[in-house]
Image (cartoon, rainbow, N blue to C red; front, top):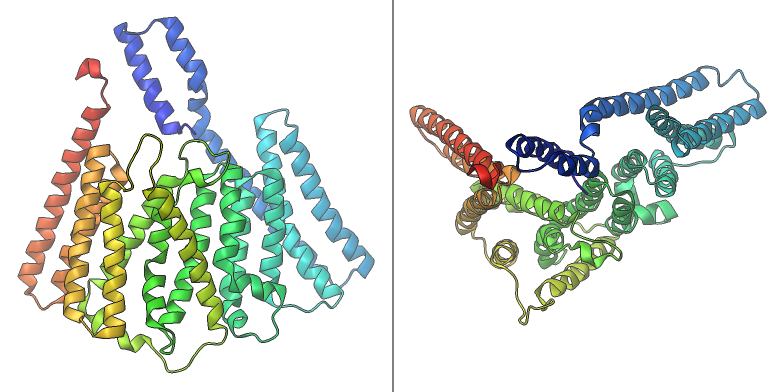
Length: 463
């Protein structure tokens, strides 16, 4: 997938090459045709139009829902059913026709907007038909069924907007119903789905991201897996009778799985379109975790997180964790085994550093909560890890010219310095001096990085 940023940079350089006589008109035209330079001028306006169309589709769907609700009680049942089905089929049929057989690009966008309105009207149909025919159900059940319906539409049409809406709806259903589902005795199919949401999200959403070839859908799919795992971690921490090793495993499970994620484990996937995203989220998670655990009070008050009762269906939470432990072990086995011309087992230096950080995090956490409290040592270790992660990320950004990695590392380093100043008793004058020095350091480092990045982007002929 060639990004628009790359195409813009290539067009700028190609024009420079043409002006300097490095390429002739024919070669420049071939590049322009291959990378569609002419379409770049309208790219920004096209994105704005897409946002308008999608926003209009959402408002249109909400308007229909409001109109129906205002006149609902005055209409007979058959008319209400007919109206609901007509609106649903009208939006989806019209949207599918305009999207599948467009006579212009604007009509295709209009079709996408109508399909979005149809997906929203699906929720109104489910809720109102259930009310008309006295079908009981919970609010979170509505979101789950609605989300599954939109998910089927997303798979059928390969539309990013519908995929995002499906993940959001299922996420809303999860947050509203997970507390009930974990303590329910008479389980419904929806309760079972919510209990195993991390596994279900991996099965439902990750293939959808590849099917739609959408980075946004992939990021949301990873969040739909990671957030339920964090909920499970929080619940495991909150109960004293659960084996403490599972708490340590659940804390490091997300970066372990994300860093070992490979696109090659999926069939018919060429290149690495999403692997870098998983790695970035793993580093982001480790940075946030190191920042939280770099405070002494977090370790000193760790016992305040526990209660004295046992949750019902706690085994279900452990099954979710165990499933991703197995997946992570298999993925790491695929990483360390020899590939192609590689004759020995092993990983590169950067993967070694990340894996060491993950293992240390798990061991320190397990030791503190199971063997003996090491609040001071744990605080020191996580401050050191936060510094190393920031320094390594800055170096990676410098080596690869990655602006996001560089600034993420800078933020970690500055946050560590500032948070230590405000965590402990220091004079106001010293705090002001530290803030000024951090500000100057960030400005100098940023200007130096951007200057070197601009130099590295110049063609060799000008260097």
